[in-house]
Image (cartoon, rainbow, N blue to C red; front, side, top):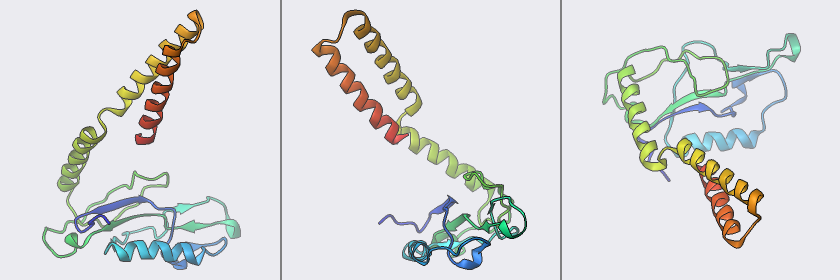
Length: 176
């Protein structure tokens, strides 16, 4: 299990913690809600309560067909709750989601978020390199091999190269 004490976990979870986070439509499956609550509890995460808009998603229908749910949220680890930093209220659009922006009472400053974003970018490059340029390189090489096969036919050498490139592309797509 990953230590989430200093984590900020944000995004579109497509799950609710309880039926009060949903109006309209069928009631949510109790096992799904229980699994989601267990995840939050097991990892000692704290739910950041939105300043406005109780629901973050709607099916945009009218009257009795309308369904609204709180699917987007931010959780924090215990580090952020223990007062080891200065609390500052900011407005943060939740852009990790396909749902409309939510105004949240965040518990960190914009400077800390920018610092975190830069650290994540550095980690991403170190961990995954430049995935897009790798993908492009492999796709260009696959095209080259395919053109060679069209011109001269498939030899064992081209067959092995093509299979190797396809495996490499599958790995890159998985990482992407």
